[in-house]
Length: 206
View 1 (cartoon, rainbow, N blue to C red):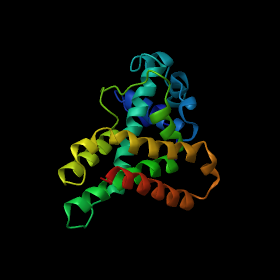
View 2: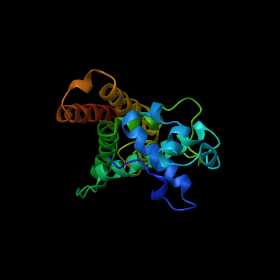
View 3: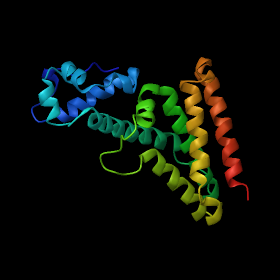
View 4: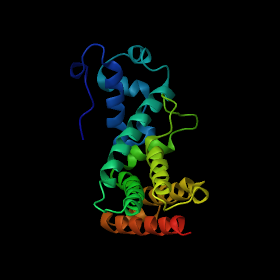
């Protein structure tokens, strides 16, 4: 894991980016509780007043770090989604939905501290850009692609994101805080694949 940034590791004008980067370092292992604006400033080697010029309060820094984590999570999910070699558009769309779920759970397994901040931050934390979390956007897009491919009807599509998201989110929670945290990672991934296949089968069944 990269070491927290110091005063000499950022250039003048990059303090905001350095604060976010250090926040990522601290929360990667410590989750949301490890992020305090004064602590982040201390790690970088600047005064709290300097940090407050970029983030008005603790919540503002939390929101910025959480947004960065969500962006990284979406990148990880896209890698898991890959590009299906299936010639049939419907098969490609189904594979895309499966990849979204596997990528979501996979990120939670690999980065539990970041995952907790991205989706279990204190109440009132919202993305600075006001947009939906990119992981949820990927899920919406995958379901819409199923409609375009003729796999789902518009009626089936309505509300399907909540069935899918609750399944992978609940599974991730069991992996981080529940009984699945005691299992080897390969077993957890196998169980995740089954849960995702089960919910997808339910969603895709006419």
